[in-house]
Length: 192
Image (tube, rainbow, N blue to C red; front, side, top):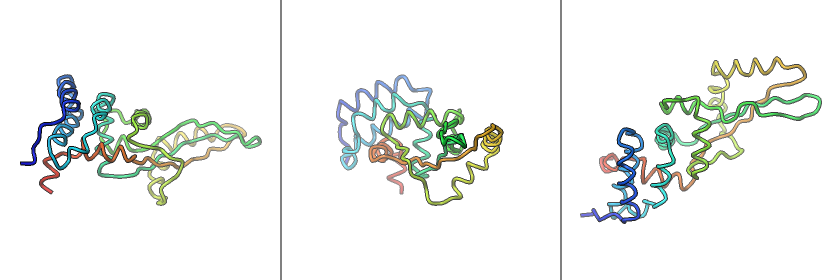
């Protein structure tokens, strides 16, 4: 009895886009959840028409990241920089390093920093210059074998020292709405 006809400016583009994402189950699920959200009187207000274009601009791995953020919340990131000792100048050599791609089950985890850039561009996440308060979440990244090797290699440069900036990934309010409308499966919400 709560079922309603979805608004055409959401349903038509979503159905059209579904035709082209049939082989990409991660993206198809986002469209299907958006349609289900828009068809329920109680949740239709969450279905923003811009979500269709956002999904069109996402890769399947980015959809996996949004699903990961839905259950895991804010995540740690680091930047590695080389500081010239005498002058205080620095150069960021590796930015937005995390284990998010691995933890989310991405097909291409090394591209996670690029995925995060795109999700920032879409307005779904933010990477503010503040960090999470639990040191252990950063230790996991900093002690990861490939990251330790990068730091050791950079540390061999004469007259330089290696420093780490701790950051975090946070969902924006729009990102939280996107998760409620597109990521969280409607049938799973009804069962819980």
